[in-house]
Amino acid sequence: MLERIRASIPALPPAEQRVARVLLEDARSFATLPVSELAARAHVSKPTVVRFCRSVGYDGLVDLKRKLAGSVNEGVPFVHRSVDEDDKAGELVVKVIDNAVAALLGLRNAVAVPAVERAIAALAEAGRSGRRIEFYGVGNSGIVAQDAQHKFFRLGVSAAAVSDGHVQVMSATMLGPGDCAVVISNSGRSRDLLDAAEIARKKGATVIAITASGSPLAQELRHGGPQVLLAVDHPEDADRYSPMVSRLLHLLVIDVLTTGVALRLGSAQLRPMLQEIKKNLRARRYAEAGRGGGPSAGNGSDGQSSPSTR
Image: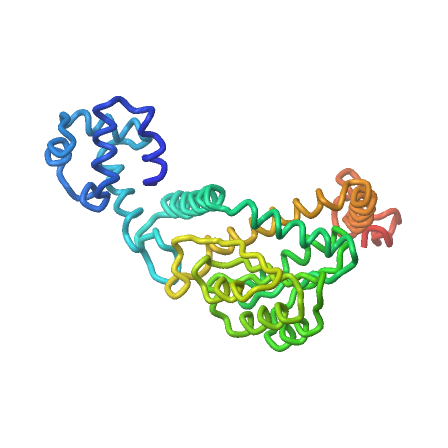
């Protein structure tokens, strides 16, 4: 909400811009002060304060204050950083989506493009030369690793997702120069992942870490060797809240890497294979509408499904 108001300042009249700056300087006080005090602080009239609220998309001062209070409150621990216990469904929709959008735009503005380029180059070279690409993650990050494996194996490369700590150690031990270990962690403090990253580094593999810039995992990459840090920083406290925004950001980074590697490998190699995958998947679907449309739809008159639609 604050980012949206900040972005709207250039389009506001000068008097309303002063109100916006008062809000951004102390949003918590703005949500509680009377309109007369807000007008005095911004050196404007009370109607100007109300016009400002409507200019930035709210019904009035009361509506803006109510939503502003929810935006700046700490919220419910372990759920989401901006929600309140008494929020209605509509408010939850706005807050959760706004939080996600703000985090995505923050990543876009802060991402280290040279690091992304190095990661794509290493992954594409591993795929082109038939080397291994391993995705390591535990808990919620293990699910992101599975998504990465699902995306990468369709590119015709040797990709695997490993979420068990013991198997990660064994997998990292079998890596070598030219292989890639992509380590995904929100906190960057999981002992298993730190051990796997260190082993992979010592074996000469390229270690690509998707984690917070100040985490122990990020520090691990400073020990030398072919390593890449894809820093994903966000306001979500891993000790207090369930991973929501962080998971979306990590999935987005995986999408960027997948797209970059696909472009590096070239359409001549990928297009025929992807077309064949789509063709074979289509054969696994139920009959199209107009031919029954249900699981039992098929060519036979007894209602049994045909082998191609089963």
